[in-house]
Image (cartoon, rainbow, N blue to C red; front, side, top):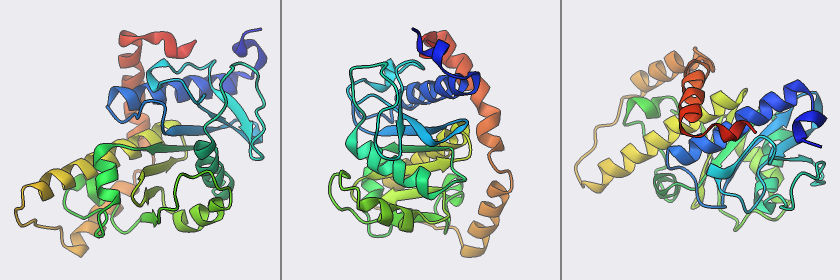
Length: 249
């Protein structure tokens, strides 16, 4: 039977939004072929979350193709011949199990994100976009491909209460109370990294924002909560509907 006929309306909506998020990450050139992953909790099932089938590209993702898995790594749906990405399970099970306030976690390997992840200075307070992450971005040292389940404790420790994590020599991760919030956070974090790499590549002396102004701007942005992501989400879905509405299937 079709996946939609076997899940609650709340789970189906989450599946549609998560599939849309995969398509948007690809549309904005933040995907990495079959690498990286985005996860979201299953409403009403505290021990289950949705993850992409390892082997499908982000621009192929649909609501029905997403895999439901529990925190022990057991696949709870039989809707695909694909398995989940082991590294994806390690990373997202760590985040979602360690942070009950997080509904969605999003991980990328973009060129700019990887570049900043390898910089000793980390993300700098140099653009308005980067102010959102001023002194509230975590860092996690590289341990190799994340297939060691013991790494989950260190991921949880390093992420702490922040909603952005830079995995050193690896990539970026953002968290959200909703799927739109996690996507919006990643979009802004990616723009921040792109601007930093572009500016540093010129060799020119950079003007960083003073601490007091950076803190003020961050507070302005965080006071809005997830409203920026929610406000833009319907427009993102309209764009996807014009391009290819198959993500909803």
